[in-house]
Image (cartoon, rainbow, N blue to C red):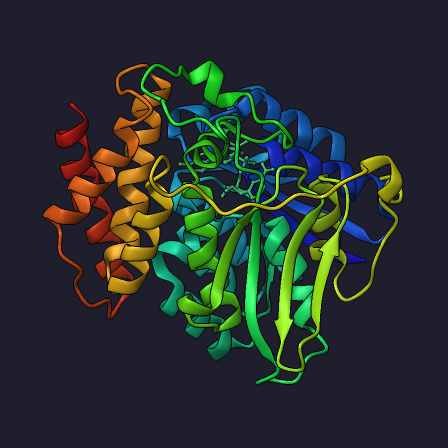
Length: 376
Ligand SMILES: NC(=O)c1ccc[n+]([C@@H]2O[C@H](COP(=O)([O-])OP(=O)(O)OC[C@H]3O[C@@H](n4cnc5c(N)ncnc54)[C@H](OP(=O)(O)O)[C@@H]3O)[C@@H](O)[C@H]2O)c1
């Protein structure tokens, strides 16, 4: 049995991971954590016989402790303690946002293998996070569908034989449109192919999601940014592509279902059954590809610029994006304001070198303050 712990178990990835665990005979859940959804978290603990949970929101933790007999740890430090005390084989980090950095550092610092859905950890602290994994020998197994695909595609390739990586993007609900001034949160939340949490769904609509994934891919596969391409592929069947030095290109295909990459990460290097139909290419009919429209969707350009600037710039990009997306979801910022807030925040905070995780926490806090000012 592989002992696993899931942080972010109440979210879209987290609940799909529980479905994978429930169907698997090889996985034992030893801990669960979330932000504030205490009734759902304590129900999950009861369902899976988990004795210890953590909630980042201290009030929610107090209510969970009052209403259930599980051991409840409180605050962001409670999530870290849950991980460092758990004696587990693998942590799945399914938190959303830069709040995921603490659990990522805790798991890798303890030498525990990490299944990483929380791409923001790598966007914010890519160099330090990958160096930490290397230092402790912990494996970093991506859960993002494109990166899971790339991980599988490059696994048997010799270093030096990979020329380019290609990330595919669905294009989101506004693909083909150029006037986005009046789109509402409901319009932006209606993703055509993937059913995901609110923040990543908005990131998909702005194409920031692909910008974050570009930075994630750079850190996971040590490929320079200029050799990572983004292609819009509305059917979301081809998840990623690798061009090799002998002219061959390898692609990873499948119906869009996150349980596939989640199951791969939780069982790696084995594979387990997932109830997803085999891909029927005749039924799919055609696979189409187009270039991303970076004029209408400037977030992808902003992510490339922050990636090229390096240092704290990707952390600032991410923090400004989180502030802007939440302001948009609350109806306080127009859709097109998201990119404007990020661009102004990046312009106001030039990239600084990153020597320690504390530099990142400081840059994140500063960027949030500047972004809130711009968004107001
Ligand atoms: N959803 C997908 O299909 C998908 C695909 C690829 C990659 N990802 C990535 O996976 C991650 C999770 O995405 P999601 O769609 O599953 O998000 P989600 O549905 O919004 O779930 C987020 C989870 O994080 C918890 N959380 C939120 N803020 C927190 C905080 N400050 N401290 C501790 N826990 C907190 C939430 O707990 P509460 O319920 O208590 O708020 C919930 O369990 C993101 O990085 C996303 O980019 C998602």
